[in-house]
Image (tube, rainbow, N blue to C red; front, side):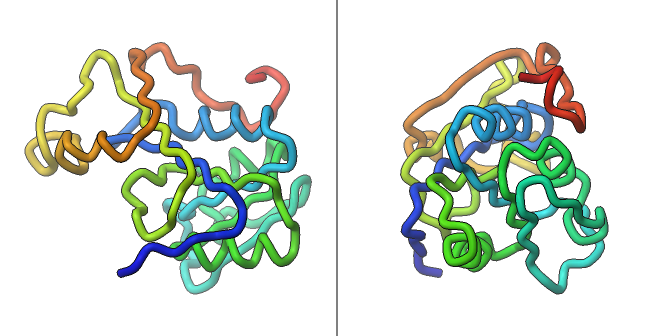
Amino acid sequence: ASVQQLNTPVVSVGGLTMGGTGKTPMVAHLASKFEDAAILTRGYRRTNTSASFVVHRGARAAVADTGDEAQLFIRRAVAHVGVGADRYAVGLTMETQLQPAWMLLDDGFQHVRLRRDLDIVLIDAENPWGGGLFPLGLRREPLAALSRALTRRARPARQIRPLSPTAESDR
């Protein structure tokens, strides 16, 4: 598939390994710092996968439509949230409806179909390479993929504070 490009700058936060490297808390942090940001997310574990959804900042949506991780963004109300497997299509809808200044792509390092202006890769400093490629380890792709990233940040995953549904204590 070809790479698709939005008109809005896209910043991807992702990782090489599966599991808790702090991708979602980092996206929430960036959304609170970037003026007029929108978040694009797949909607992991949502039960209604037939449609894409745009949730305006401060609005509510059913967990079945968004998944639980997207709810963390929605309840914090720091950005508009677009949910759908096709992040490009959701991004186009958000550009048309909301004209955000930034798109933050949650867990987007492997979503190579969407062009990004910046790739941030988070790495667990205690298990940086995940013990090998899945299914033998936690790594999603070869180490050479790091060449796509402009920024890499390592810290022990056990030091990452869980993201609360409300914004104030995490800022």
